[in-house]
Length: 112
Image (cartoon, rainbow, N blue to C red):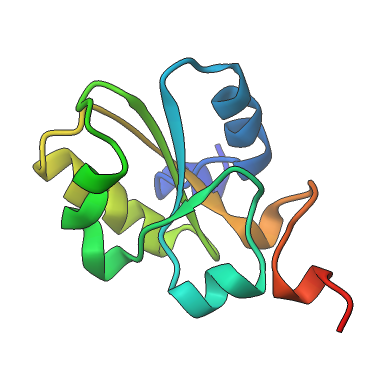
């Protein structure tokens, strides 16, 4: 078992694959709006960690599959905890975008 698994951080690449296979699933980026605009995983919604109560505007069904990520996995671990406290049952911390190997979109990827 790796260090990140021990800390409850998922493998973001495997997590994205699971998200794509899941029905009634949401991919939530819990970084700041500025970080999200710079780069994010396609299909994700931005909900900063300090606004977890705003989840109800994105996810109405508390049994929906929610996959959360941040930069390295720390903020998403806290987001998972907060969402569980709000009654969301199926929240997975898939770790950090820093380890993501897929296509990203955002300001960093558009020509100036």
